[in-house]
Image (cartoon, rainbow, N blue to C red; front, side, top):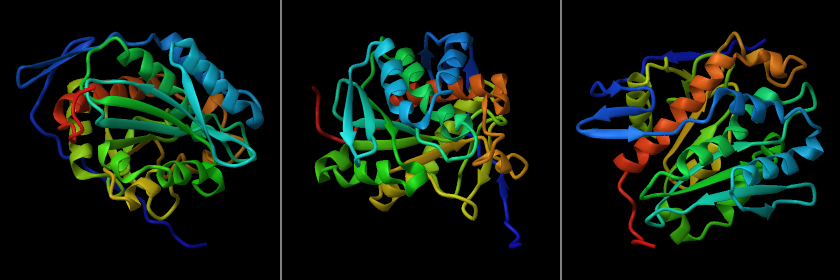
Length: 283
């Protein structure tokens, strides 16, 4: 058996931030979010215990329950990407995604309902907060069949649409451990900003590269030179859960999973302030 090298990397932390329960201060900046309850986050996670054929409908319903009208983008005869847009003051876009399909073994709760089911909660968290960027939430199909959904999505982007994407944040396999980031795959400034927020809200964050063991939906975006970051929770010890019968609700650690939700929620609000909208003007 070929030996796989796992890289566990320290994350560089920027200036210290002060944090409250729903807000953080940095350089005079205050972020306040009305966080979704732990019970709601867990309920949306449990909603994924359906057949593979029902997953697309399930994520559409979750988006609709939080007030987002969805659009679908047909990828093949089997399924479509599901998109939910939260308009901002400009067309500059922060894109957040995960995939709803899963492998034949297990129920695919970790890989990747844990990521995609956070999208409605993140929309709910941000929808009443003024923001410069447009947030687009995309539930991709066909990741397990060769990144079909994300590849199709990127292929359909015009040159102007690609230029408007300030960042793509991929949520993959969360809740197994404390949040991790695929440092080698991710754009450095996006890693730095994530580390700042992780320190602010006191959520442990570790760099764990998985170059030699897998791929994810950041890849098609990376090929088009769009800034990306991949947030996950996989370690050498937990890797074997994926694509196995152990990939079920029992594999998720509730505290780690809710920490991942809080981290990403504050991160998205922080990026809205720290990233410069790329230039298509106000709506």
